[in-house]
Amino acid sequence: MKIIGIESSCDETAAAVVEDGRKVLSNVIATSLEEHKLYGGVVPEIASRRHAECISSVVKAALDRAECNIEDIDAIAVTYAPGLIGSLLVGVNFAKGLSLSAGKPLVPVHHLRGHVASNYLSSGTEPPFLCLVVSGGHSHIVAVKSYTDFEVIGRTRDDAAGEALDKAGRTMKLEYPGGVSIDRISPQGDDSAFEFPHPKLSTSVYDYSFSGLKTKVINYVHNAEQKGESVNVPDLAASFQKAVVDCLLSNLELAAEDFGYDKIVIAGGVSANSRLRAEAEKMCKSHGWSLTIPELKYCGDNAAMIASQGYYEYKNGTVADESLNAYATMPIDDIKF
Ligand code: KG4
Ligand code: ZN
Image 1: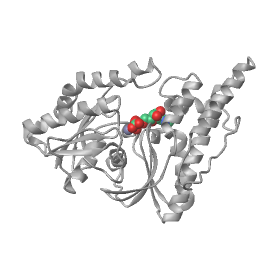
Image 2: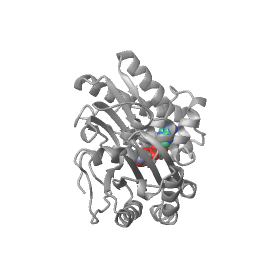
Image 3: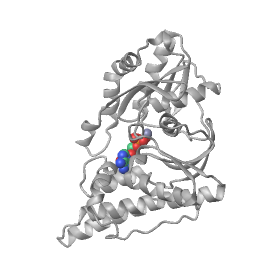
Image 4: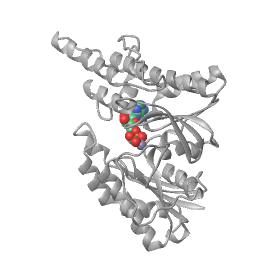
């Protein structure tokens, strides 16, 4: 079964054709990232306009590169939540038009479920497993009981990991996205140079909080500025990255032990982080757990992951009609459309 996936939840306009949920026949991504760099973050209106301009050619290129036309496609999967609403609407409306004109079923896909599915593209991993989903907008520990049955075990109470990395990077005057810059610069720094607290929450032992760590970075930089000193950016970046990765993995480890999972999966943009990948590898090895992380090309936003999850959602009977809308927020474990 061939599914075309369409993704436009943030600043990437993407389309991909995937066979039987696993075999990527094409994967096309256009991004407006360079324009957003000028502003230090994604400007929603610019992102929406770029989606509108390039979505037709991106979808056409995905079909061409997969050497098929729309008649060969069995269903159209589209990200409908969560994300920037103006961005999501471009993809959703395009998918609705395509579905109507080609007479193909329309399958709504939750963006974070798509990130989880990015692991099906690079490995033979199958649920059940415990997944750390870490992106620019979310940090979740999720029990993936089947391809379409999810339960959130832990979540961030404030900033997402990617958001905290991006804001810290901005404070250190590094290029947007801060997560990528911090990853790049950290090997040049001493990760024990700056101290960070390890936040523990009273709400749940599996929950995260990153805003305190982020404030610490702001304080270090402001204190140095007030004294007329310059802060050592590689040291600060390395220490902050260590703190974020330690937090992410310690809660994940606890959840895996408590819920009895020996299969660990990581997904989302932050799964590209080299320290997270290396430390997760060590942690899983020490317990004898298996670890799956997407190939780097599937860590960030892409449509192959949406087509993959779309395949499993479709097999589970999920089909939307022409009234499908887009939603800025939507829980991963209780989807509505
Ligand atoms: O999943 P994603 O591409 O978009 C969302 O769904 O949010 O995640 C984007 C986030 C950004 O915060 C970015 O800084 C972070 O992923 N990111 C990284 C790395 N690559 C992307 N964070 C740390 N290290 C990286 N190598
Ligand atoms: Zn994403």
